[in-house]
Image (cartoon, rainbow, N blue to C red; front, side, top):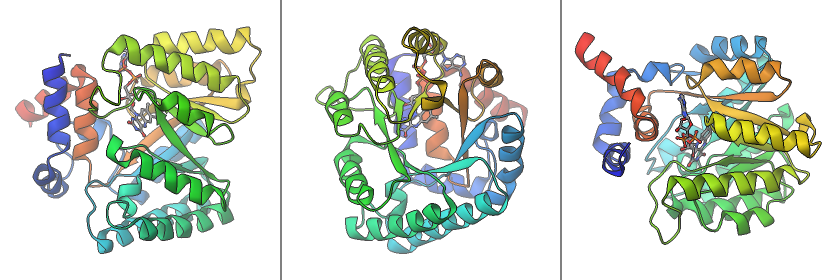
Length: 303
Ligand code: FAD
């Protein structure tokens, strides 16, 4: 896909009016293939089905552009309800969240208060919380908040985007933290991020291998079979235990590979987004993968 098309979808993902309107439409454009349901109750069966196949899950209650305290408190309460549900239903599942959902753009102290409440509940239930990484303008603040929260909580980790030049340096400070390695989903300038696919892939491979040689748990989050094969060969050559890492993929992507990896003895985790705020997430997936456009066309022309 050319950069122009990618930029077009990233632009749509950032459009506040479209994001707000899409919440009222219900799922459209084929989004239901990638967004598992509208609320926590509607995704419990999906998680159980995945768990039944030996796959663990991470749930993300989608939320974009939260700009007032009331909305952030609603998001926090919904995440706490998710934790209750995961606990009650004994799901093999952790939680992924975005700090902007919890007030990062409003007031950092307020965001930390919301996170503290979530982490206390999650720690009581022994559930891990992952801070998803957003656009670069939130990056430094997100790592600062992680640092504050790590002083009190061990059940928290984050994501490192290997398109960032500084990823290598930041990983040095995160040696004892559970990390999800990704290439990066947003449009960033060449002042902060590699731009070519070759450079981004090479940095992903190099930094993920370095992580795998360390002690902390690593989630290798990619749909790229070439990279997955390279990681499989690397762990074998280096006698790295399969308990120290997992592969992660997004719900609805390359489902044929999930069970295969599990059957080969690797841990596997499916990232399951849900909720009415699906538009931005879905547009970022279209930016990554042109083939997903077929679904949009089907929805537009055949419904
Ligand atoms: P790409 O680099 O897009 O594709 C590489 C190659 O893989 C393709 O050329 C193709 O051969 C193959 N391939 C890829 N997808 C498919 C497919 N569906 N079917 C067939 N072949 C395919 N980004 C963030 O910025 N922050 C986050 O917090 C974050 N969390 C994530 C969590 C998970 C579990 C995953 C999987 C991704 C996450 N991302 C996140 C997105 C990530 O940064 C990338 O944008 C995204 O994963 C695309 O990169 P890729 O390595 O999967 O594949």
